Amino acid sequence: MRDEDLDWLVYRRIADTNGITADDLFACIRQDPAAVEASLKRLERYLLIERTGALIRALSLQESLVLCYCRHARNLPIYVENGVIRVKKNDG
Figure 1 (tube, rainbow, N blue to C red):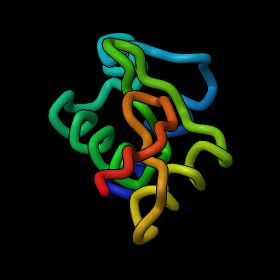
Figure 2 (cartoon, rainbow, N blue to C red):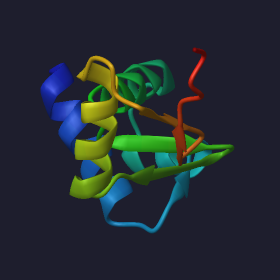
Figure 3 (cartoon, rainbow, N blue to C red):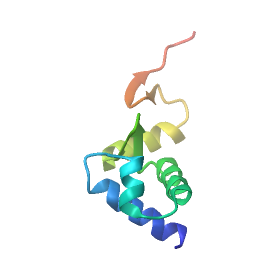
C-alpha cells in the first residue's frame, strides 16, 4: 500500500472516533504496525492529528490552522504547549 493510501486509511479511522489508542488502531487497520506508526508520525507532522498520552485524535480545522500559524509565523507572541496556547514572556 502506498504511503498516501495508508495515511488516508489511518486518518479516516481516527477521524471517525472521538479518540483511539494506537493498539486499537493497529487492530482496526490490520497493517504492519511499523507502517501505521510511520503514518501517524506523518499525520502529526502535517498537523492533522494529535497524540495525548495513549489517545490519538483528529485535530479540527481551527486547531490545525492555529498550530500551523504558530509553527511558521515569525515573532508571534504566542506558542502552543501540550494543546494550551501560551503567551511568550517578554525578556526585555
